[in-house]
Length: 168
Image 1 (cartoon, helix red, strand yellow):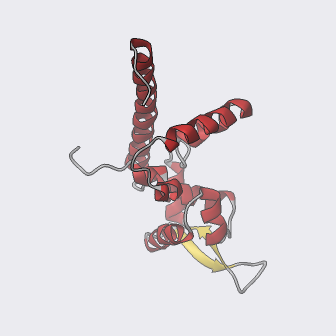
Image 2: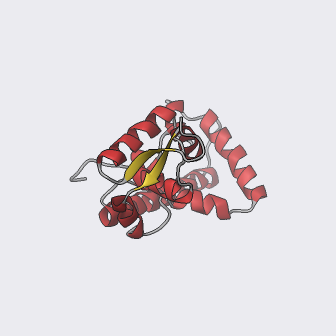
Image 3: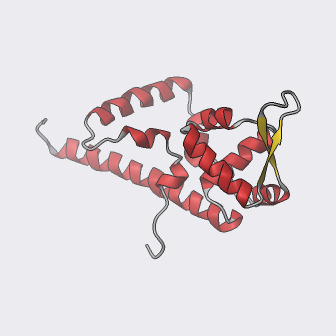
């Protein structure tokens, strides 16, 4: 452990406030998505990806979202049950199933107040590549020192991680 001084203590607090701003802004965005669309941010992200690529398969969808295929499959099944998505045989390959938007899914997307995947991926995409690479290196270093780090969170949608129980 390095010795602390007033300057390093202040820098720690400044960085902590930056994380609070990111976290709070993401939570507010996903709360607004749920209020306007009646679905979670991760469900809306699935719908948005299907809108971008009709007949997409679950494997590719999971890959695009950076989540585990079983997590993606659960999201898709729920959206099919809600009448937001349809599973259809692909025109290009009748042996494979692709996903298509249903009317309820199109209606939910029309109410979307911003990017379904969240404001953080959008902000990261706007950052110059050199800055993004530096951030990646620095966050890796931070994660090396993070007690209780659980790698399973890396493949979980942010919208699902930021949900809080009712009444909080």
